[in-house]
Length: 353
Ligand code: GLY
Image 1: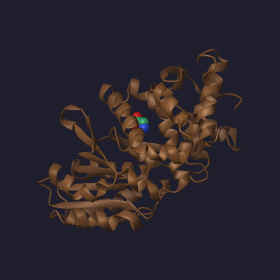
Image 2: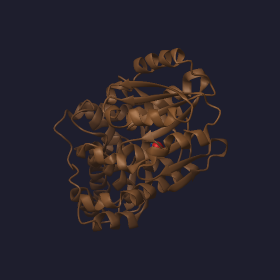
Image 3: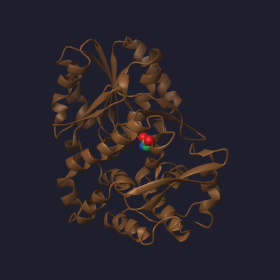
């Protein structure tokens, strides 16, 4: 089993990575939360059929009283109405401050459940059990929890860390191929912003199957990169912002497409391509970098071009983005592959896309 410790003082927590580790989830929860009596699992309608029953059994076998709640799969569930319904479920299940909530699912479930845990009874413990590649390499780590508003994604939230993260790469076998690629865009992002060696590795794999054979190492590498960044900048006021490479345009594309036609990873892939195309033209990125960005994105069939959506809607969506403060945008650019930096600009940067 690979273990990574995220060192954040009183909020320090471990990330465990191992194929089929879900079999030991009850034992791990018992080890870290021996005083809890009740565990409340939140999952979604996609995950439920594969893992909920078995996880519930494993946790129950450790002597916990387990309650489960299934929310509708998809970004639309990440809202305050769903959270309110869940608060009532928690009260009904008699969860107290010494108990804990488990987030079993992808990024939506992790963000939603983390937000729920951060506010119920002024905060109770929670455990991340990410079941998508995106959640395993990014959203389950670092404590960003949030729900959406009609005006934009993740506009209500906080920093609230889990007590532990349990990553089982075997669950990716049942992931829809489109959502595997969704997470792969974030993996590629880590290579672009921080790790030239990872870039070379991803380029050298024969194909997607060959990459999947190495998925444990890939997840570990990404978690280590994110761990190091979060330890240096927990509250996202400096270096952590580089994790948003490709996200300004990516989030806007997702929002304008209604979160269904375009996955998060697809939006980010397009964002990484377009921003680097522009920055290299402006002399802000070393020559040849854009070519290298395209080469890797193309290798894994990720989209490159902005879809045929209303450009005014796209710019409005970028204006409301959290990264846009007083019309100043902290845009992430590449100096070269493996090195990112923050560039202060505004949404006019994207003019003409
Ligand atoms: N997903 C970006 C971050 O955690 O900062």
